[in-house]
Image (tube, rainbow, N blue to C red; front, side):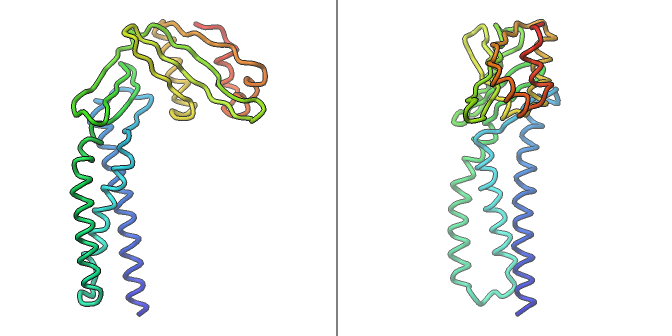
Length: 216
């Protein structure tokens, strides 16, 4: 009995690890394929993360069920589980294809977006077509919450909101520095003193300097 429990525990842990590894490989592979080894400030496969996880889970479930040693006990239940898992696998397979073609990233060359339901509909907007970048602090001083938005406005009317909480403060600062070095227009909307203090406490003095230094 103890050996059986240990074996089942091993199968479960191995299946979970397999899910994480497969999901990581799929996400890393997607980034490698679509970014062409350029300098990337931010990459997000969306809404692929959920489908990546579910798709990887179905493979892990196959592994868990098919590595069962005692083939006689619970054979009917195993058959039902395999059937349901196969149905889920078939449903997720086309969604996985759409997911692999659904992404958004910011690089040193352009902002690139490919939407979920249309395969091959990638839209690329080059930095040379940027009209302006507007840096804004949004937050409630009373609630001690604050966020920083880099609102990108392009010549063709396309806009993107880059949130520091999504991209991370390090990449957010690098992106803004890159935009300034390209001599692109950056507008900074001055925050209130309360908001500035929240920015400093939440994101550090280096990020706060973005709002106290004159635009370049």
